Length: 361
Image (cartoon, rainbow, N blue to C red; front, side, top):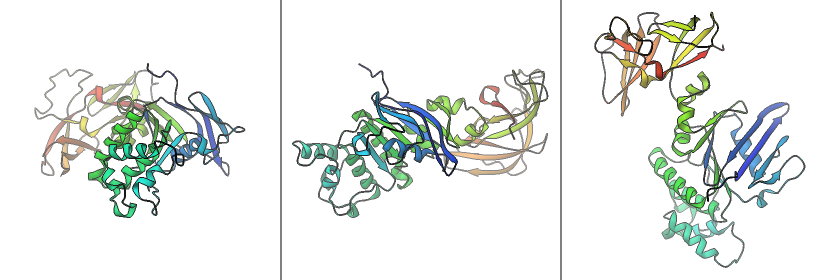
């Protein structure tokens, strides 16, 4: 039967240092077997939130619950070692004087029957059973990460907290180890809260993303929804490069070089920003072949000239200067597309790939 209650729940957590609020009324829930990513730029309060949940730091207000039981408020507090929480950090924190097997078994009750079997089981599952007698300095970064994961999982924690655990790995190793880690965490059924500042990592690993900014969770949901329905320009910009076209609303419409955009519910005279991603700019090789009466959905083609073109491996990035206003827009094109500087082209911008936000600054 599927779980109906959150394994981890934090309610209205706040924390301030010298009058500066770093965690501001944060609430979230994580179900058993679910991976939630706390995503945001450095200094937004992610790691502080994690430390409060782990019990190494106290909140100023709010409560933490595990399986519906109170773990901590501002009066009652279960000590860190009593919270059934596993921890993984970017430096792995392996004990250099213990071999791999002893590192994994460190958090298990001393001399308990079955300890050796649990250690061997986990080392087998992370592909490290043949390194059981080795010491951390004899291992690669990827191997150390696998050992750290096995050690964190050995006591069967209900909750796993992970703070940038893959940032110390090189790019070639990172994707494979993230996938292996995710599979193992899902099998163990722990509620996982992963802190990261990398949108790609959050999109790859998370069942749910909580986007954090200035101490607050500003948007929360499935990766697809967060990416495709950002709440504001800053949220869209955090996940990828963006193009921004400014305009003024008149009769719920905004004029742009690409034709009119709908701005329902926005008062006349309001300045708005129309946000799109580079992959959604389309090159119209038929020179604006939308016909004499383009639809509001398709818009019109706008004339632009190539400023710069670069091959990025999987795609090409082309920068254009718009004839209409001199602004620069970026477009990405699959494979190799390297037009010469100054080449004139026509661009279109599908309406269903754009976001319209009132201009805030």
